Length: 415
Image (cartoon, rainbow, N blue to C red; front, side, top):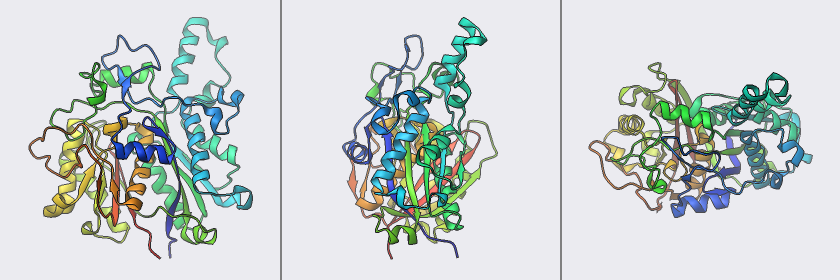
């Protein structure tokens, strides 16, 4: 019999707040974390806005100043989020069997900021000037590696890279590790720091980013709104501490929610566009709900992928209607990307945290900037203001380039 898995610690580094409490406060306030790009000079870019993490000091989270210089920003975010998550879980690692604690942390892109800088150095000064830390700073698994090293975690350690589904896949796969009895505790989620020259230029070339709100960044990200025009890039990290129920109860841990269901599948359709009508997104949601031992009628809230792009918002809405049928109008749906932008590989982590807090507090974060309804997009998108609602169970969706779909089901904990 598989073990029950619960969420006991939350670590958030986001454009609207650092730490669980400030992040949750920002969500409920409808705080907007999107502004002009400051990480580099974006004057000549078609999109000049992003959701940046402000006032981040890695040394405030147990990272030595010298060591911080040997980490890409995406790894710094992950290590900081891990400190916050373990602190929130009130877990004394000196009293734990570290062979039974694992690390599943992914990034959709990895150390692209480091790659930009080192390539420029290569072209300007030649190969002899490349840093010996270039490769370990750039590769996408190093966030998981650093967290395991810094905390001495010897359990299963892996890095999922599935674009925007990364964080959810890491959390779901970590859940499976505990269910199988291979670990008692897992720290899992996603991290990303891709607000850099090459990444922004690449997404601009794809015409994926919002390019018509450079002078009005606060209203740029508008999921499900008829006037949406592309996503806004964000950065940050979201990690959760997962435990077997037995382990959590033995140490008297606070339980935010039970992680009850998980599913992933593939559209097998196109490298960037989702399959028409959200067909396989619907199948993924249905499979996750079934895995949780629930039915769609038991789920009160969908924390949507909700990217503010035409194809995603249309397809996800159709997928929800496929799963819930006539009852879709009774399900509340919101996208926190309206406030932070799209954190790419970190999205699933920070959105799982938002979902866990919604389940625990019976409060739904809003979709801000929702003003104009589009024909066919007629669900309850929790427009502009947070609202109270009993949440027995909720689903968190993340869908990535390449057709990767991942869905997590969280439910209220009960003995």
